[in-house]
Image 1 (tube, helix red, strand yellow):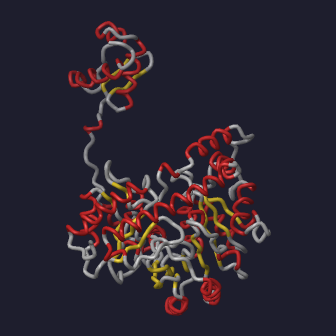
Image 2 (cartoon, one colour; image 1 turned 90 degrees about the horizontal axis):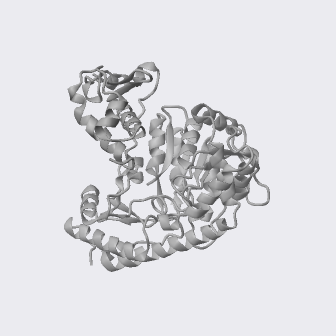
Image 3 (cartoon, one colour; image 1 turned 90 degrees about the vertical axis):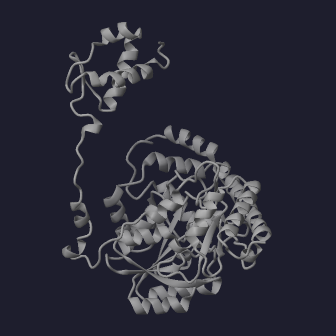
Length: 485
């Protein structure tokens, strides 16, 4: 043997021999193993350490190594049936309704398709659109910043809060660092906001359809999502007012810009109206601005929080979508006493966002490469959107005829013929080599029609998109979905 891979070979040999020894019996000494196998003492040490890490061997300094008294396979089955009662018995402790902790919708959006399957179900940028080098450089520079590993203020570094304030409120100073709380990404911000603003058992109004992750957060907090229908111009103000009156809700969750999954942008004449309706109901409006940096061209309208004269809007923003799934840095923006409630909830939950990650974010957004990256993302998404629309009109013209080109975001919301089995179509698509997202999880109540969401963010470019649409068209044909050309 040689020391390159010999420790692995030796460990494997010893695994096969362990049955010769009784539990607790001493193994041959290191010197014996060196002589028997013709390896170095370092190799023996590494092999025994590997077996100890697996729980097969116990090493005692100065005494030798012994077969473990209990191996992983020796453990008796543990009866955990009692947990089914404990986890569903919340009503007896005064909770109005049991929580529903279901991560299936979120897990589906995070799932990586098997090799060879084209990802039309993804919610993050393809590797070719991520700023990999810039992120690496930012992390390296951040590591050398003075105090980079010190504990940050619980609400976040002042410089980073000031940057988010300028990005959200504009250079005019409408918002300041005191209005910003740094969070571990957008999902964490949503969790903090909904837990802070609504007591368990209460309703929370959501657009219909809406982001499944927001509904999962609400249900896990013991809240009841209540749908408010949308049209092509966003949520309908008349139905929002009716929903507040009927439910007494104190929170409305919405995505006014490049909404997920529809891609809709809230119409200009509705922006002030929904803030006024929410304020008149004594409620908060949680504005999820997740896709602001994913526009395809024209400058998007300002966030609702900027034009809010009441402190009604709690704004959520994140840098994860335009960068990398692992850059989990976002912010909550709010005015008034609610900020202290948000801050307290986050401190109780997680203390603070790690300082090195905040420092790296400052390095990233302060570098000359940052605006260039955002321009590349906009161009890349616009090109992929056009490629998907072109391919859909060619291969499934009956389904694509009613599609509108979104002006931002990373997905198309495709209406399917009545009676279509979304799950069967998704399964057939996966067999054909393309992963798509069924529409049902995007609705808080009964879905008005079958849909499928097709994302173009996690694709390498036009060729992969064209091939993915061809595979999707084949799945439509297999399941009898009308609309294939």
